[in-house]
Image 1 (cartoon, rainbow, N blue to C red):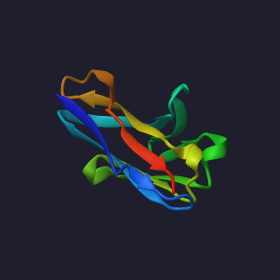
Image 2: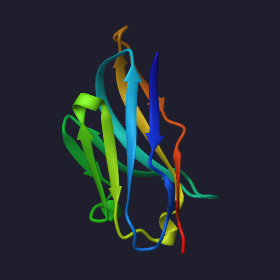
Image 3: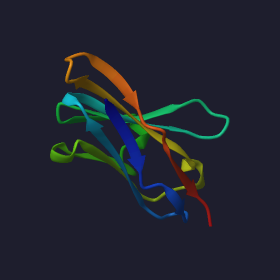
Image 4: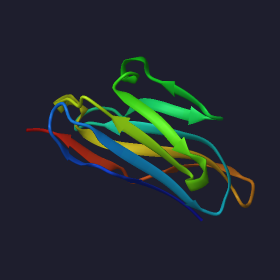
Amino acid sequence: QVQVVESGGGLVQPGGSRRLSCAASGDISSINAMTWYRQAPGNKRELIGTIRDGMIDYVNDKQGRFTMTQDNAKNTVYLQMNSLKPEDTAVYYCKAVIQGGDFRVRDYWGRGTQVTVSS
């Protein structure tokens, strides 16, 4: 069984920073990609960026304030968010494409972590 868990959300003041974590655990053979999304109330889920084979692809307007990094030893990716704005308020989700011990490749979603940017 595989689990994906996001953490690090909370209340942040405008202009502040926050680092989110997404950790995968369980019966993992390999992790093919990990992607961050976010969803604000009333909006569709929005892609932030993907780490795959050590390469990072960002949606254009996210690069600069948002930085993704990974720790392969911990099966974890991080999302460093700087200069946060109230419009960054959302639930932040992680999706991992994982090959399990049965060698089947599946998508696994976390439950999300809430980030609220407010004074």
